[in-house]
Image (cartoon, rainbow, N blue to C red; front, side, top):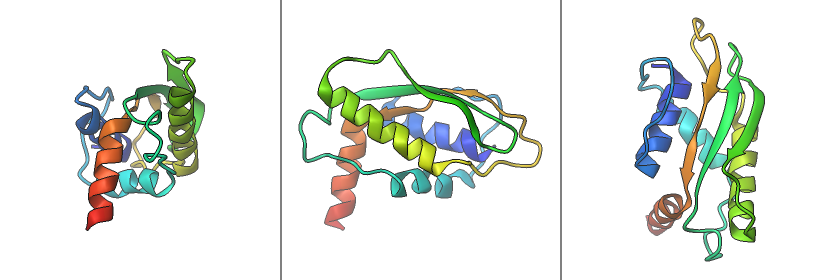
Length: 128
C-alpha cells in the first residue's frame, strides 16, 4: 500500500466513503495523514465550519507532488463551506509532496474531508 493510498483510506474512514486509489494499502500511511493534520488550522469553534463533507480532485506525479488541483468537487457558495474547503485545500498543499514508494507512478485521487468528524476528533484530542 502506498502512503497516498493509506491517506485516502484514512480520509474514507473519517467520512464513511470509499477511497479510490490504484495501489494496495500501506500501513506506513498513518504518519503521513498526521502530517496533514499538523498542517491544518481547523475552525471548529465556528458552527458554519462544521457539518460539511468536502472532496477534492487532485493529480500526483511519481514523486508524490501535486501537479493538478486540489480542485473542490461540487463546490458550494455558502461562506462556511468555502472556509472549510479552503483550510482543507491549504493543508493538502502544505503537506505535499507525499511520501511514496519508488515504484509509485502517480495518478488522480479524490480525498474527502468530513468536517464534523474532524472537529469531533480534534475535540477528543484536546480532552486528552
